[in-house]
Length: 114
Image (cartoon, rainbow, N blue to C red; front, side, top):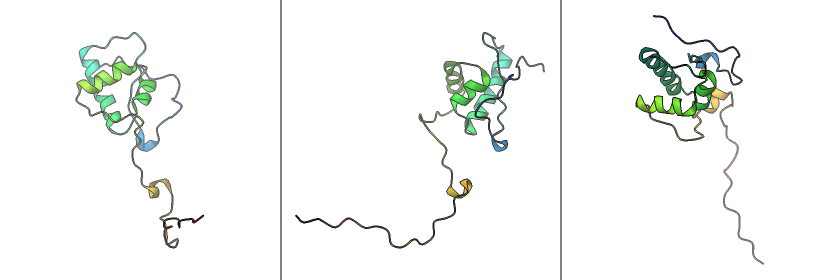
């Protein structure tokens, strides 16, 4: 099957890591998608979004508008994340050592009499 998608000419500034290698095609502005191409594009952006790509990232990689991406995801029944959502990452995944015994937790401040 021949695809009408074109690869981006310049890498995105916030390029995903190898674990987040999203397959988001770049579609030149003004290009209309056939039903088959729209279905293929929708499946790819749905997969990327469900794997954690933001709508902003998908917009940047695909060259499509916010409305196009949002509408496509909604039509596919994808639950939308809240604004400003960042996936929860465990401290160990970031290389932060586990908290050891650092003494008693601070209690309430004593009342100051005047």
